[in-house]
Each structure stands twice: as structure tokens, then as C-alpha cells.
Image (cartoon, one colour):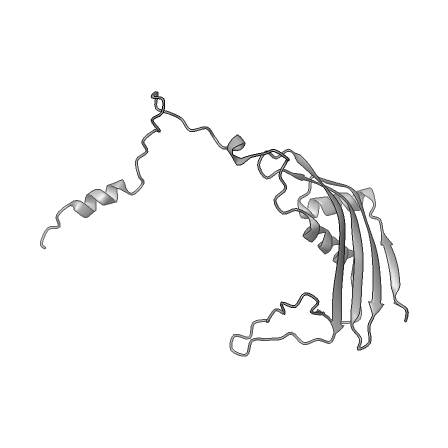
Length: 173
């Protein structure tokens, strides 16, 4: 990276898009590109900003039919070199900072921009894609009626046997 930063255009090949789709469980990733800038701030912090564009095809969580999601997302991540992890003094566990623009630790002097873009792609994807109009009632099995209309089938409670034991008198007491 030069003193004035750098700009990158990322356009994965067909095989790279297929590998990303497989990695994140998409049915396909027919279109995907990113434009990323990397700049150094005063104090040594590194800012990675970018914009993702593309289309993800995922399986509907209800019907498993393909669902398209068009992407046009921006992101901004700040990295700080030689930043020590904040640790809880009692447990020794890492403490997460809840500030939106809190810097991420940067160990060494290298950033994998491709991996950063891949992570942002996974975050931009809908975790529960649903085909328009799909309802849970459409995919659930229909209740069976025991030959009588309007009367739901009586099921035996799994702990009914224990209830009988509870009511039984005990010997020796």
C-alpha cells in the first residue's frame, strides 16, 4: 500500500464464485464483484471500505426452492496494528467492544482483502431466505383426524405412565 492508499476491483472468476457459493452454502453466486479502498489513518490505523454487488441464489428455508437476493452493500472496517486484546481480569476471556467503529486488531503487516470481502459477502446474505408467499402452514403436515370430523386425534402424553406411578401408594410409608 502506498502513502495515499490503494483501490482494488475484485471480480472473481466462475470457479472462484462457485467456491464461495459452496463455502457459504449458497445454491449459486452467478454475479459478484467488489470495489475496495484501503487507506492509512494518522496513528497507524488502516481503514478498509468497500461496496459489494451481485446476486446470491439460496434455498428457501421452507420450500427449498431457489430464492434470489440482489446485493448492493457497503462496509467499513478499521484495523489497528499491535493492538492488545482486552481481557477480563477475572476470567481471562477476550472482551468485545460494542462500538460500531471499534478497531479490529491487526497482527503483522498484511491484510487479506479477498478474505475480508468474502466475510462481508457472508454477512450480507439473508440467513433465512424465504420464497415470496411461502408460509409455514404450506409445508407442515396436515393434522390427521381419527375418522371424526372436528375432533382432533387424542394423543397419549409421553409421561402418562409416570402420572400413574405418582398416584400409586408406596409400600412402607
